[in-house]
Length: 232
Image (cartoon, rainbow, N blue to C red; front, side, top):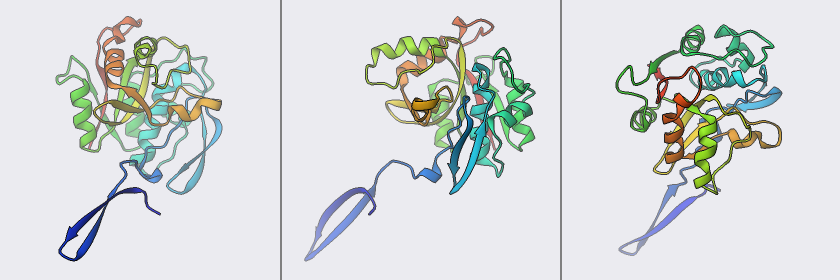
C-alpha cells in the first residue's frame, strides 16, 4: 500500500479522498551511494546489481562523488577505482593523491558529463543559495568542505549523524538535496557497519555552511565555498 497523507473532503453527499504522497524519494530516483572504502560491495541501482571497488584511501572521495553523479546522469556504471583512473589517479595509491578540480572535470568529460568550477573567484560563489538553486533545477553539486571542522560544528547538533572517520582535511561529497533544515549529501567516507550512514546523509545546514566556509583551515586550500556544478 502506498504511504502518505489522506484528506477527507465533503462535497455534497460525496466524500472525496485526496492522497498526498510522502516526500521520501523512491529508491530508483535516488543517486547511488558509492563508498570510497568499498571492496566489491554490491550496489543496486535501477533494479540491477553492480560491484563497487575503490582504492580505499582518503584520496578517493572526489572520484566516489563523481562516480555517483555519472551513474545517475549517464548509462555508465564505473567503479570508484575506474572513475579515479579517468581522473588521472593511480590505482592502489597510499592516499597522498588528492583529486583536484581539473582532474574531476577531465574524468567527468570522459563519461560525457560537463562540470564547472564555482568559487569566490567565479561569482556567484558556491554558497548555500547557489547550491539550493542548482538542486531546484535538478543538478547535484560536488562540494568541498573541511571534514574536521564539520565534526566540530556537529557538536552543537547532538542528534546529527556524526563522522565515522577522524580525518581532518578537506573532503568532497555530492550534495543531492536540501530542505529548510538539512543538506543531504552522499558522503563516501563511511564503511563496514556504518556504510549506510553516508547514503543521503542529512547535515544541518548551519554546520555544513560553516564546514564549507572553514575550508581555508586546511593546507593548500585558500578559498572557502568551493565546488563543482553540473552543466547541461
